[in-house]
Image (cartoon, rainbow, N blue to C red; front, top):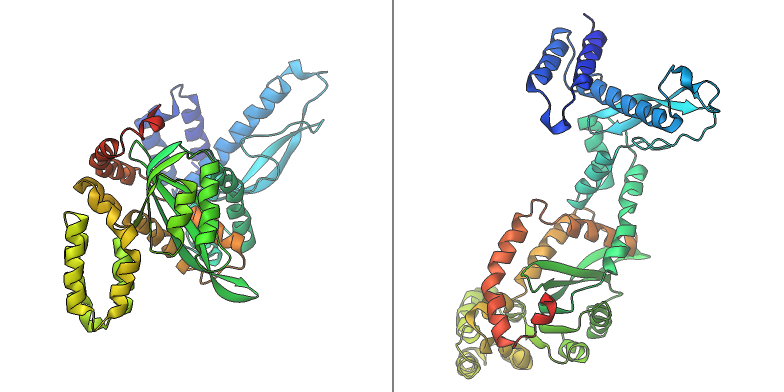
Length: 431
């Protein structure tokens, strides 16, 4: 029995089974594989069983589509004089998950047939596009993706084609960036990362990220914005105003770094919001003024400050730190004094809230994924390319959904504390 005969007979048997696709007869599948092996047909690779099955399934589906379009079966006398009829086939090669597959597409005399399973001028099935987007989101360059497809699937896909595939996400990004938001959020974390953009010359450009926690305890990335230079409070005012215009009426707390002028911008947009400076950012900034040999000692001396039970107790511990290190590192003392008003707010809350909001670690984990994606690119030709890469990295977060579950469980105690501390301000978000 030839390879093709074994394959055709086996496929016809599969087609005759009148059961859902997810309840295929295991015995029938085993018989199909055994016949292919007996005929010397490989299961995978070029010309293998999977490719041939894909070809037959696609061609069968296309034949069913033209039958529905014309209203009669092939060779059916009922089609005589109907005004339109089959007009042969044309060949095309499509890239699938199992490699390139050459198929025949039926035509009609009027040229009105529009196939859906493999559309006109379509050269890739959806799974291939999704694969390219997934690889790109994980930091692979267009050249890496092209080489991967050639090595694994034997498919030649140019870097320009891959760029065209990834460009499709821009429409979805525009819709996502302008979607309506919840009326209230317990916490919004704001931060920025820097990417290299070649605009005349390669320079660092900030991309601003705003991440919120919803009243149900889920993570919601509100948007991405490309800045035009340094990380400035004036630009943050534009970003926060845009977020407000998309429906955010109230925010209980905004956690940020110690950027000068940022508390005023937050207060302008949401007067009731508590501005909290990230403790981790303060510690990192402190280390910049100290010798490496003193980092551990300074960290231990500052820990009693940010773990104090109350704001007055924190002030006492800071005075002790000042006595110990003020002469050697006066710049660190001045740094904490300038940030004190935005540092102490979290000390008035329950430990559940403190644990969550005293740092921007929640957004730092997102930034880490973004940096991993952009690092492989080196630099981007323009701002749009940088935003596209960051957006795909954000959309690929937590593909299994397990992270979402852990996030929600982690936030449950804090949300209960927020409900009590902020006197029902979250209730509007649960209506």
